[in-house]
Length: 200
Image (cartoon, rainbow, N blue to C red; front, side):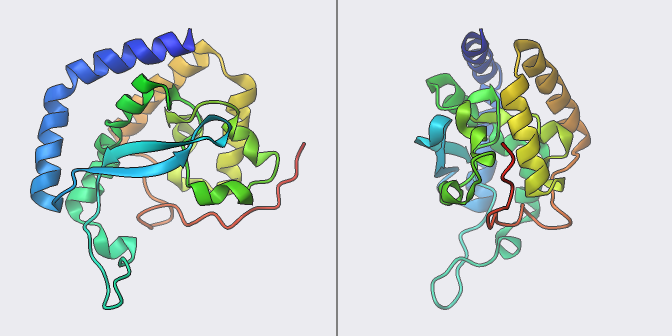
């Protein structure tokens, strides 16, 4: 039922939102340049890599050594608006349709984090990653990594179709009020450096 819900909602949403997707794509191209889409390999279910797609929110800007400037230097007001509105996440509906992601599940993080997880934290990969999730409607980037992983594993152990529907409704509410977008004034979450959570 969960996979059926994912496919039906993804197809309907892509059809209904296609004009909005086109407008956002044009704005990204005009304000941030090409490419319009940000593509990055992320870990999926059981840690298997897949290519996640989003609208890009940052400029390509580098220092004298050719290294990317910090996120704060590359983020524009338009990029901040895209993130605050969550419009940058809309292309992930394609990931849902092809089966790499689910509408609801732990958010896919970086591949480099995989060896840093404790066995308990790694349980977040027992299910498909989601466009939204239990952690996103309970604080999103305002949470610490420890809190986020606790909520992710709680979802893995308690997931139901009704819980997914509740999370989807709460997500819409969170997007409207733009709650939990930033982490203590930063553009994004600080990098995960590994934890000491050995809960079984």
